[in-house]
Image 1 (tube, rainbow, N blue to C red):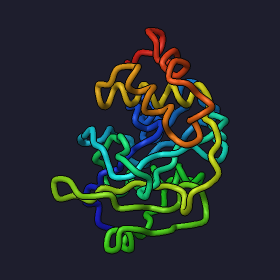
Image 2 (cartoon, one colour):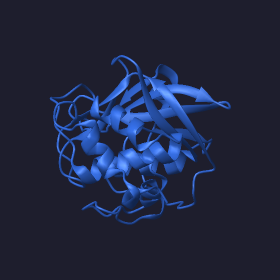
Image 3 (tube, rainbow, N blue to C red):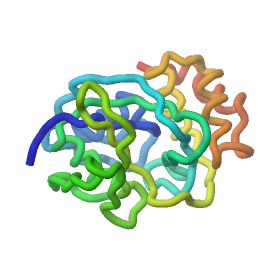
Image 4 (cartoon, helix red, strand yellow):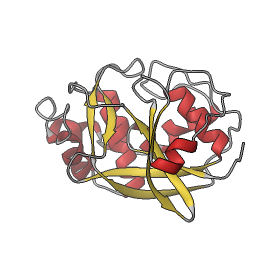
Length: 208
């Protein structure tokens, strides 16, 4: 299998670098209930970029790690989604994808369809649909999401804090701007106020 680099585009809790390291090196993120096995190659990403992509995120289903709704990307939603791109080896990307699909790392997934056509469904699960969302420095930019929109479900406080601090760390946003962005997402909208989310991102929750 070619191990050419791939940009993994994170739009949820993996916006926060410390949390994403659990997918690479293994471990349990602060506030999370699930321990991740890590990648065969645990080295940090070769590069990072703070980006936005067409579409938006919404919260749905129930997370076994955080409880409450999880973030999913929908390219058909209006606006742009804030994201962070990590440059990984193809093998690292496959291991991150496996862990998101609740599978053991170690499978070199065939990504030929998404690389050629922009979309590939690897299974029926929540993060088993891979999308190509662009290209940067000659390398494809891939993310994964649900195969179709689901009923909104409100996220929990620890999950929102992880996302909010990820937005602050990746994009340099204030707590207020991150809170405004998250409070407007389907699933959070009506269940969380900007003020309540901003309170989660106070001095005790600053990115490290």
